[in-house]
Amino acid sequence: MASLCAGFSNMRADDVDDFIKARMEERHITGLSLAVIQDGKIVKAQGYGFTDKSGRTAVTTETLFQAGSISKPVAAVGALRLVQEGRLSLDADVNTQLRSWKVPENGFTKEKKVTLRRILAHSAGLTIHGFAGYATNAPIPTLVQVLNGVKPPANSSPIWVNVTPESTNRYSGGGYVVMQQLMIDVTGKPFPEYMRDAVLKPLGMTNSTYSQPPPPALAALTAAGYAASGEEIKGRWHVYPEMAAAGLWTTASDLARFAIGVQQAYAGDSDVVLSQAMTRQMLTAQFPQLSKSDGLGLFVLGNGKVIQFFHDGRNAGFDGLMMAYTNGNGAVVLINANDNNGAIRDIVRFIAKQYGWRASEAESLWLKERGLQPASG
Figure 1 (cartoon, helix red, strand yellow):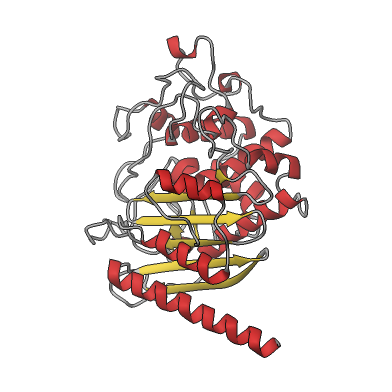
Figure 2 (tube, rainbow, N blue to C red):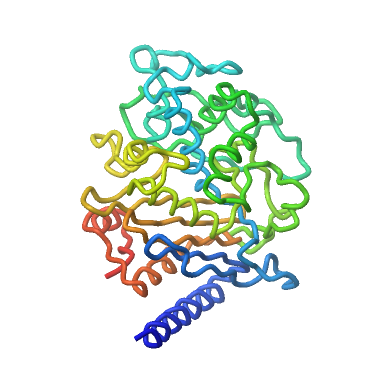
């Protein structure tokens, strides 16, 4: 029986490898990092291709990729830990604890305020969907300069409230920049330092950092990013002072460890960072009248025994997807390319089929609304 199981595992792995290599060739993807979670453990971790088009350095499981917006759920766990410790409130006006900068008050904030819960669930009414980042040789703005926007060196608009909080669901990277400043003001620590000690190290994410740019030793492990045109990002990658929104450098294996940490906390098997109660709140739609899929920093699908949680990401030259289930399964795919043809989604869907994961009815409906297909059939 053991040999049969081993043979099945090898056959499955070969099929996944072949599928990934074919998609990479078809979509001209230079490098890819993969981690597969089965029954709460990483059962496959592998690098494919090269860190850049020179072909000199192969991608390994320790090659660093930019996570893009997958930075948000990891940062959210850091904020929720502060809530758990009583240092932050999910429902208080964030201006009561912001020190270095305040959310500008206006007619939209007169009756309802910006709260951490609303920020995490993209329902705070804050502006700015995403950020372009900064060339490695360009002046980098402070976080307050990003929040105020408009004036150089900031290259984005001001972050402010332009619709009544909790009146609509609207994705806002700007909200996570407000959260980053809030966490800095409350902890008195640089954001990368706090996140390293409070989240990354406890979850075993030892190859990850929010430092922007990464220190030289880690910069040497990074992949170069490529735009959708195939052109390499000048300087290999952009710098993102908007760390909570887009600044995580990581590996597929480290993001898999993050997902496993969420799974274990949800099941009550570990409280190394968050309690079971806080994790279950994180994986619950916060304002179902606005969105049935926005938890606290993660998108969630299903309300039965098994919850699917996920987040995708895109920075200049990098795309990624982390998708997992509370029953202990999941996958992470990171690429050093901006691909507009769904290669990552196809890979995760293929993995789901190969490993026998079933899409929930809620997932099928959610994807159907967006013209997509569920992860398994």
